[in-house]
Image 1 (cartoon, rainbow, N blue to C red):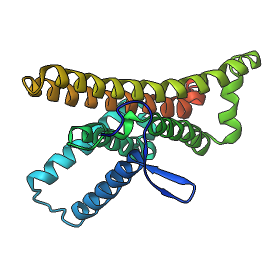
Image 2: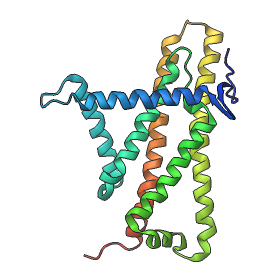
Image 3: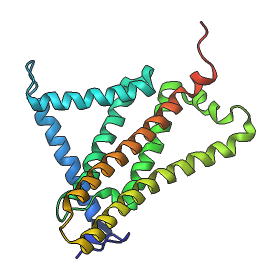
Image 4: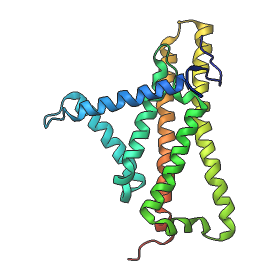
Length: 228
């Protein structure tokens, strides 16, 4: 039986590179999502099917969430935030499939996601504001605060990775312990708990990423609002 602890054993090796269950499941999610989106895009109709209506509803919900936080730059950052949200929902819920473990129960996976948010935050900030203008916010309101700004960038990235990992790992462990104690007497409450918690954690991670990206984009506008 696969180890339920924090150590994820490799499934196979490619030279010096060890491929774990986390990597395989992540590849599978990316492949299936890509194929699904491609197939859906080739079957769009003016009279939408129920599936198309559901997908359009998801897209509109993501668009509204992004627009509420960063209305002036929603078009630029929505593809990233939307893709992150969709991946996290699928990754968190795939633990419900027998024999499949959620990639987000692996600290290496959540660290990679947190680093992606970290890099994207600076990339969007530099792309939209320009390098000089973006870097100025690290010296505001005083250059003395530069070390604290840098420390906050590191600590929030670590917190982003550890929060998702800890919650998803504890969720799987709690479900396992309850099933070991109660058997299958209470599978539906455990299933519902897993679904709700998985969706909540995906929402929190994506919303924090959205806030970080929006903050990097709007830092200059917040300090120097346009004159009326």
